[in-house]
Length: 262
Image (cartoon, rainbow, N blue to C red; front, side, top):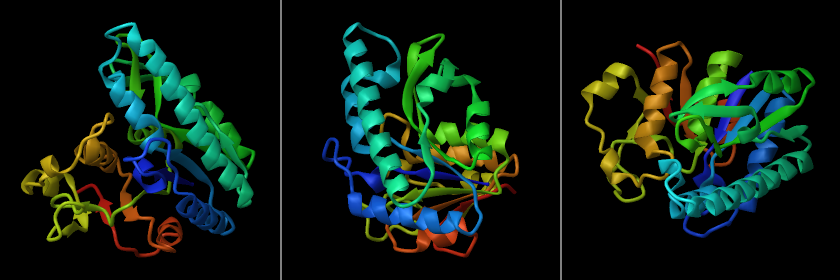
């Protein structure tokens, strides 16, 4: 079984609210279908991109409850993410994938931004039926903050501990993790492997990356390192390159950053 995270920046243009890259989405769906035809089961989680992030930022939803004005923001963000998820699932189904949308906020609650309850049995039972669950970053109830943003990265971290995947793939719009932001610096160098020791030893210029409401690249790396310490390795790849996602899902060598334990 494979857990696949599709980055919001891969499927959308974050600079343009509610935009979706249909060409990329269609090709990605076809590569996932090819993987499933090889007998692989997948759980897919996608980020917020141009649908969730602008609204979450506008209404400061990452801070938890601070004012009544945020209530409208919750409704708008949830609607936007549901619309995004529907577009993703529709394309998957059009490509022959038996995808099923799962509303994250209906099966997960948090306490101070940490997952408190996760009805993972829903995910497991749909997998057993031969369906491909598709979850997404969402605004969820929080016992301390009233609500919080639960990122796709936190979702895959939790699911990995429950589902024991054979492979975890993060599909993004760049080749992996660089020593500094490759979208700003042409001399940025790809880091092919990150372990807890390498992470401590190397000074990575995370400040050159733009952070979003879910914490940015440093948060992602820390989350994935926590999985690596438990034996769950991850590869971060550029799924904008045709065929690269398919190869990664099938376990072939591809350009990317491997997040591994010692």
